[in-house]
Image (cartoon, rainbow, N blue to C red; front, side, top):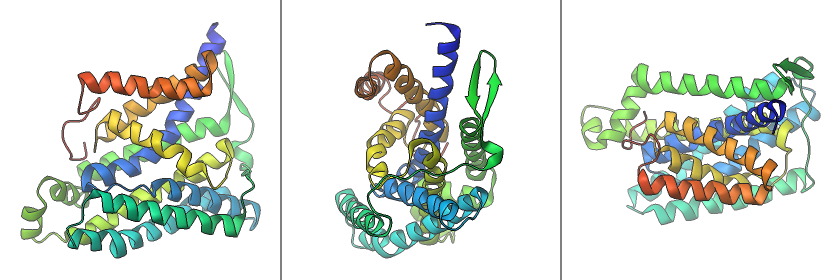
Length: 295
């Protein structure tokens, strides 16, 4: 393997990692902080991709308007799901199994609605002119858009870290995770904050879908295909740890890139699960997991 091929596969791995990290970040703040198993997360990712495709290809709106639009639609829909469904299950003291059934049922119904509206034929999203073409990076020529995805995902992760560690609202959210009863006693509106954070997670999933559309294509099954890998990312990184999500996302992205090149796509996915098992044997809490609070 020469330096050009090595560099190319490394960049491919980082691009794959960027999508995984952005998508998993929304899932890890919901699962790690709120303890909610949202199996509909992949649906919001897929919905965001279709929103981007529609606004760009059928309405003529620019790519840059698709990102906030997808975030808003998916965030509002996710907040509605949490407020009307998951919060009700919490009041009834239902366990995680009921959450899985509710969110999975929502995803299945939502996917059928998407198929009815957009059909089952895979679609592709066009790129803005400024992000077309390629750039020379050392020994390789790499697509501008893929570099943008890496940089954008990194920026979102920095923003989330600042939000949860340096803002008053973020600190209130962490206090609910640490001790919900004590936080509510001090006047924190825990149900409202839970709804907001759940909506934030699904909104980020929608943005990830817009970004992934031009690279991976848009089809109704794209959410379910990535869901299992996402759970590997957040479990391997450590529940509730944003830094752990970044570390595991990069690791898994590189494994898939190199594994696909040297072996095959299926072998690469099997290798991901093998690496996860080995790491969890020695680090049961994940690479950087130290608890349930956002880190």
